[in-house]
Image 1 (cartoon, helix red, strand yellow):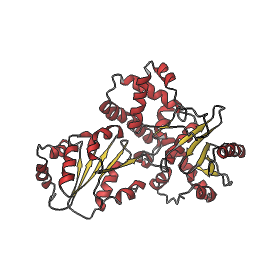
Image 2: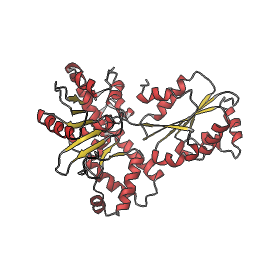
Image 3: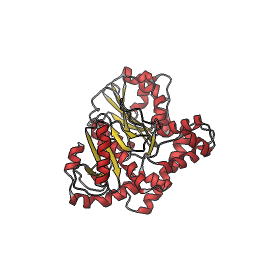
Length: 394
């Protein structure tokens, strides 16, 4: 059975547009499945699905004269005289095809849907020459709403934070809280979410982590010392939700600061981590410039890093906030902080395993100083107060 992702509707709306649709993200987040689902709803037989990791499919684009590619595609049932739909999966495996894609796009009536496993690579793979010809979508592991759908539930989530806070439901909370515990422990990779066995979930997560090193780190990077890179990664896994001290990390792994910066850029560019900048209102000069770190999936962190439950919860909340907008954090030199700031909405969010009224009052004072429009405590517990949002409702 196939489960629809939120991204499905956005890409579906692009079927009739001219631009090349590019879907990028980590391996195993469901890009190939999504591509097949889009192909299936196109009521036109002049289409074909190509796996660019397959040498036979690569050979279709191995032509000095790109016009001859149509002769190769004719064997797949494609008529160049009609609107054609070409689906190219894992384009990073055969970057030579990119120039051909540009040529065919410019000279024929063809709609391309392309997936790739890394923004780090695709930024160079799709050069400025494709500017105006493509639209890029990023795909992540499941958020909790999608996770519930994969568990056979029919969640009805609210869009605004006010609605999330005011429409909490004790019965729904009791029904879904065990799902949320599993979501935190094992994360949102679709294959893991659908696996009923806990032991198999752990095996799949270890395989995803191993695959990241074998196919992304070793294939995409030019690092001389993979062991040093791995050492830093394991060090970072113990710092979930913490500010990154570049000098301290460099000293701990025995590397130059420039090396640490390059490792972080690669991890962020391949979707393995996210780095969050501080929020700096124009009237406040107290903000530090250090970034905070979060990981792509709490299942990976939990199985590989073994971090504190509070940090794991904060990471899960961050991953669910990706659907909204730019995310920042705030911290004064005095130590007072707010976990997440949504600048455009002027919303302050503080994550607590068990939120209290004292937590609310402290958040309110800082949020008022920052002239935030709204503030909420995000907590695993169920609290009736309208300034608290349950993690299951986020």
